Image (cartoon, rainbow, N blue to C red; front, side, top):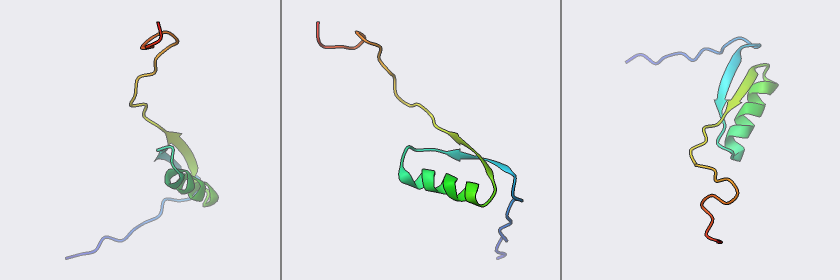
Amino acid sequence: MKVAKHTRAPADTTVVVAMSGGVDSSVAAALLVERGYNCIGVMMRLWAETGEGEGSTNK
């Protein structure tokens, strides 16, 4: 079995980081920036926002 060698992208490469809102993804993005990468943070909104009055139980 062959073990794949890890290669590093050159600095100044743009990378996308999935941001969870927690500390781990924020630290990962910060470490990438420190190493010279351009980071784009993305987050998926997986919940519905209710406007004022919508979904309210106070009537």
